[in-house]
Length: 208
Image (tube, rainbow, N blue to C red; front, side):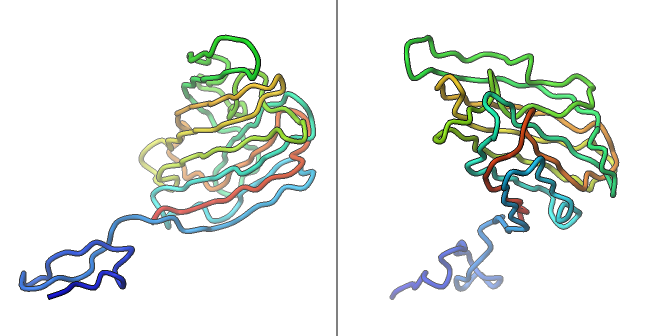
């Protein structure tokens, strides 16, 4: 006469194996927090553990990243094994949308300066003039890294970020690409193009 769903709040309800009753089933993947890194006048933030074969997808969250220097880009690179050169070959494509607090024309366009073509440079995660360092300006966003331990395919990533620019503009930045290596990616480095990471938090999640 009734069905209590409280114990299955995070699951789906399905027929049991005998098809004569109901039971809880898995609803799908969930985020598992692996690590939290907090910046304090840091030249870089490195994730050197936790990226392995445990998960097929990893998500990095950037929360209130504030630069010590005005008008700087937030960047990333990766590396393999215990290497710390952070110079993997990347190919990518990027576009941006932005609008100013004052007058101006809102813009959506491909961002050629934000992509890499078989290059080993650090990759942009911001557009235009990057992030401002006023007290209320910062950078936030998400990066997805897919199956980094796979030794057959290249390692794909997606970037979706937002920054408060030095000229008081809102900047949405999108990029997708791959580390052109079949060797496992095991670590990531994040930094600004100049100066330190004054403050902010970076969280690494596995997708179960």
